Image (cartoon, rainbow, N blue to C red; front, side):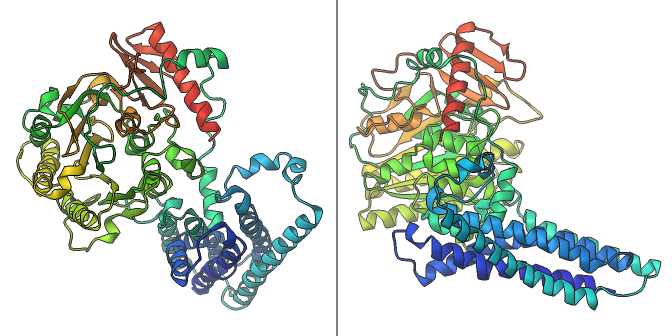
Length: 614
């Protein structure tokens, strides 16, 4: 009666084994020349251990229909289950083989995993095959059929054996059918759990990313999984937001985004400081007393700003979520109102990136987060943007104090301190990105400064940890060449107490550390995206590749404004005011101004044109 359950388990194991025994060795051996470094046994072991989860996910997809077919046949044996499974095995074998072989062959040319973009090329078969010889095509399709034959032979052997023994039997009584149905429901739930994952956010391809070498991440990632996932992330860039002809758009934008200039105000006393970038979860200006925020929250933040720091007081967040904010900060790249570029793994290496630029100057680069880096494709982006080392929750003991999203900020600031001490001992020049998490719902923190305000209390906790960290590091030799940059990923907007978009988007940027040559407040209007170019300007490094980031302390910054995007809308702010535009109605919903609207639409047009070409 429960033979279908055993059949499902065997079929699942076979599907997983096919990718482990056939697909991965084939991909690795054929593309081994893509990786210039020697591949060690440890590398192979890590590829298999990290990639297994994506193989299990695809095995779950492939097993779902055989589970349903066999369970239904067990309850209602009114059709030839062997024939139905044979048809299914033929289709799946061909599909799996095509994806696996195409991925293996194309990787040498594309250097990224096969995804839905392949269908664009297949619209013209003549063009798709124009650059390869007939002999190459014959060999390629022969390998496809061999792989399909291997998969079909194994799946059909299991199906034939099980259909003649485990899946054969008479009609069942109603109560036995009910038991079969319950077992089927449980197994479907297990397959769904494997596909989705058990974490807060559903699985995505970054669940296998672990290495600073893209080849190893791509080797680990199951091509069928990347294909399925990419089908849900269609190209949302090409042809979007077309308002002007190309010349008119460029005429509007050229004065707005200068990519060169001479820095007029020097904040640093050294061109090559060690840099700690603290990305503070949701730190809107409403929590900073000196910016008109709550009086008892970010008091240490203000104390540090007053004690030799530099505070940028009129910065606007690039967008409204962390996945957008990280790209705004590290790539100086504008947030998108209809999607998030961080989801498009193959575009990420083509974005400008501050850590990658500093690596060229000899910096050791690290990204640290107390949570899961697979959420929102953070690991994909951190690696693509040039971080050599990733540190996340899995790298810490289970005894570390945690909240819903990961390890509390106090513990993580202690880790950052120890890491800086180790890098100082080694004499390294380094750049570290540290993303906090305690000031995120459900705002559960080991702190009680504001017992009647759980949200404010969580920010006060991170403020306390940040203050203790700065006071502690200030007493060490590491302070002398240290630049700490503290910036929010986005603002905070409670659904039960919404604020205006201007207030929500208002965030602070704070510089502190022994590398500073001066202190004070900078009240120039700026965007979060301007941090990258402004920092590079202070380091006397070019920033022309950061086309949407401006050095606000340079002589070319003649038109101060900020740009913020939200769900299918944008806000542009200059010295005269703010204009908020809804892209769906294509109308200003607040602060209508033809000049600002024209600039905002030109920015969107250029942004999406640029993304389509990356």
